[in-house]
Length: 256
Image (tube, rainbow, N blue to C red; front, top):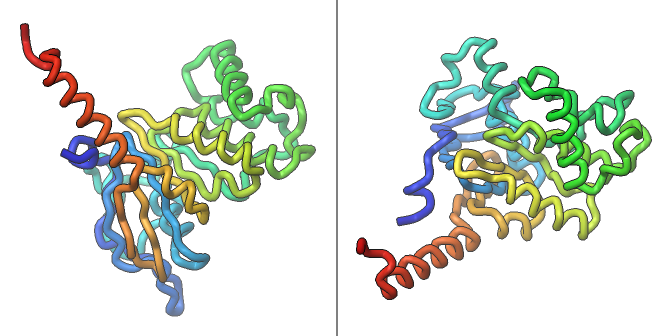
């Protein structure tokens, strides 16, 4: 049985279209399922609809037509308050433009979305320090983000998103401003953040990132032209099969 069949469906899009007047069709008849425990890459040329799809998935935009189900609930039926609550509680974002608050320090930027959490101040501080250490910026804690390089600002945005531990993490070119070493490290950080109840969605032009993810969606002219389980999942499934066979062979898979 495949990983898709055993994982729970978190997001389901059915016949999603997004049009802009007078005649721009950014997305056309997009239908897909996204599952907990998966990393998902979305690729395609510039103008293919990647950012539009990410905006709809993140509840930052609404489709012109079609149905968006989150945990089986039709998002179109949500009030604006419920949409905002779902976005704040369950969704995390790493924007290509960073969306940092320039007059705040690195620490304050990462701390900012935690203001409404039930964590104590000590727990918040520990969480912020942990995430900044993971992205290699613990030594820049008190520096204003306006004084950082593009790559450092990107890593602050990543630390901020990971600190919230979102159920669905949406990333728009998260390694686009990083060198190869930092890019590889951040990719592993994003992939390792996926739990059995969460997923990460990465818009990217990097074929290496797409290969590392469990699911690879390809867009062209607003349409899905590819939606594949990648080698990463096949390797996982192969390993699970091997371990199961080993247990049966040794008798450990049977009751005593």
